[in-house]
Image (cartoon, rainbow over all chains, first blue to last red):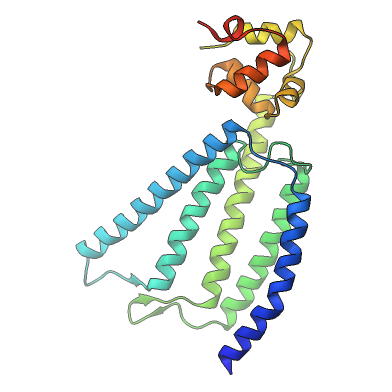
Length: 184
Length: 63
């Protein structure tokens, strides 16, 4: 029954996904320039290094303190690792102006984008707080288990990091007094 | 090292960084970084900049 449900759901989702993909391919007229591509390459490198460091530290710590160490379940370890990679990539790209297409029509670092992310963050935090009230205990037999609120929480943190990076970038640009139409 | 020749060629043409960026199909930040000497452009971009400013590669980029 469960498998049947998933197949039906996938069949329902497929046309929706196809329509969305066609729509976005028609909408997205922008592209990254060569400097942005290079910055994004560096961002991938740093995110990979940070993920490696995190996993290395976790491995080392679990060897050093095998008895007292509260272990992470494989699901939550994977989720945290992926989230860490995304956050590092996100922050680096936003701070170096390489997250959005340079010729995108939307106001990238403007108030609209920040407001959009604020709304998404509020939605996630509302969902997180309602899930955590109903959710099970996080630590079970010394292992941090993956609960459904963990997923929402991780998504919330990713959105928060992006929001903070956008606000910081905006503040830095304001402080530097960088004018868009600089002539000399 | 700052690329002052490119900056002065741009000023001579009365182009803003934004305008030159549009003509070369790159971001304003890229033009700014090239002028500041923070970014080494590829040969394709160098050629595009030269065409936009009516200069040769030697005039703008040869040390």
